[in-house]
Image 1 (cartoon, one colour):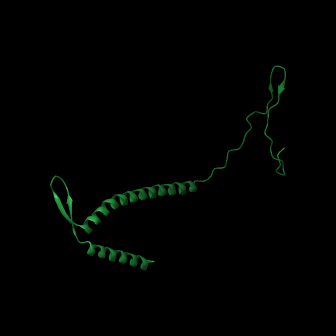
Image 2 (cartoon, helix red, strand yellow):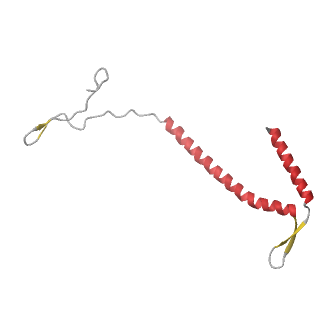
Image 3 (cartoon, rainbow, N blue to C red):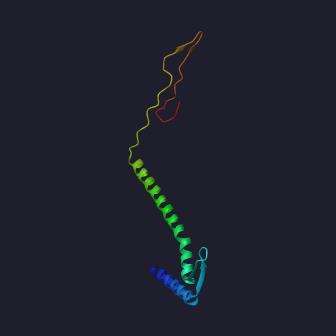
Length: 123
């Protein structure tokens, strides 16, 4: 795979050299008021490419760095959460006391939750 990378970059450098050799002409750029600059065409194209590429590349690296930081903090939180011992759930208690509640003319028995029978079925 490294060989293919080197081959690609060599081919790209060769094409850039051919382009530079074939287009080595001066280009006039009007800067401001009556100021003009004579610039070689390959240099102008490289500067224009870098003006578009560098800000985009910096933005991409910043986003990638921020996402790596978020992923690292999430990984740390996950490791900490896995390291905590799991506490057993508290025992379930009945909300009503087992004593009877008397009203005006009738006695209301408390409601109790069914418990498991020895073989695991509910009553």
